[in-house]
Image (cartoon, one colour):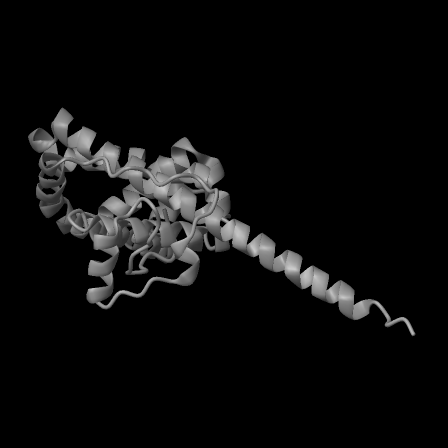
Length: 222
């Protein structure tokens, strides 16, 4: 999870009811044409959270959001410690090896805040599943353009959970952990679909451009 973090709207496909789609349009949220058909791509992840789990996440976030700047930094420092190869995806600070220096890096601080902002938006949309799905789907598409591969997405959730446990202390229960794990699994799977959707579109566009270039360079036969 990472770079361009907000794209409000709704994706419409067979997994989302016409009722939800109609409701989204009434809210003034337009559906991009390319989001209306996923073809033979990976099927959408079923929304995994119960009402009780939504409440657990929302209540815990009330505490966590007060410290999101520090949490964002901790998440990425832990990520780079456990999966140093992830740093290659961040050209602004990938050459900084000193973790203490990295903690003070303004670009990393800003990126951590953007990721926390995405989580905050996700929590705010727990009762609007279509909007949440589209938010994560579009984030996956943007990550394709930034060349941030899907294998990294799952790591963020695990590091977030480790980072926030000390903040919530006794309020962090196995039920709270399970709820957050389920949410991050859903977000990562939806982002992954968005990534591959954008990848296919980019490949198709490049293929079309190549064919056009080839046709233009071929002299007309008389």
